[in-house]
Amino acid sequence: MTLHRSLPLILLLAVLPLGPALAQFGGIPGTPPQPGPVPVCQQLLTLRDETQKHGAALQAASQKKAKPDEICPLFDAFLAAEAKMIEGLVENSATCGVPAATISQVKSAHDKATQMGNQVCDPRSRRPWCFNTLVPGLSCRLSAVE
Image 1 (cartoon, rainbow, N blue to C red):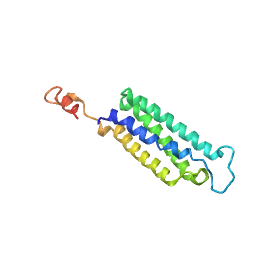
Image 2: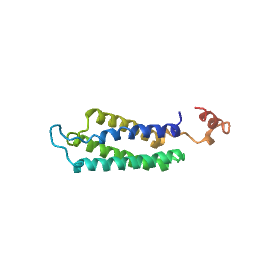
Image 3: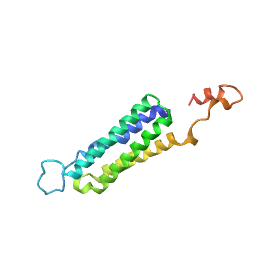
Image 4: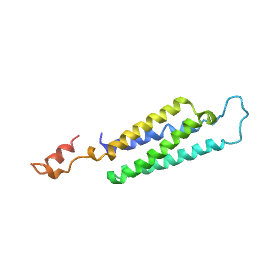
């Protein structure tokens, strides 16, 4: 599977666990129900929306087969937003009723997205240009057969 084909799948897996994590506003058991989410929990929803916005921009760039120079800043923004959201989830899990299993899923997805971002943005992992071969175009054709 090439990078451009796997990137949307990885992004989907990274953002997918966010819905259940933040949809579980229940507060502490035994307390009276509140009319709406606590402000801290509302902030988590804002962080989730921001992370999804960055994920959608990254997915759109990968679908149009953007170059790594265009994708890397998007990856950086997505990973930063996701890390900020994870930090908020960890700090406010008790207040907002976020289960530990959901937090570990989000962290696992973040680790996978970070690994993918490192692969995409690391200049050493990019393929060499095809003009450095003895037979013109041979390495290009061989590398395209993955």
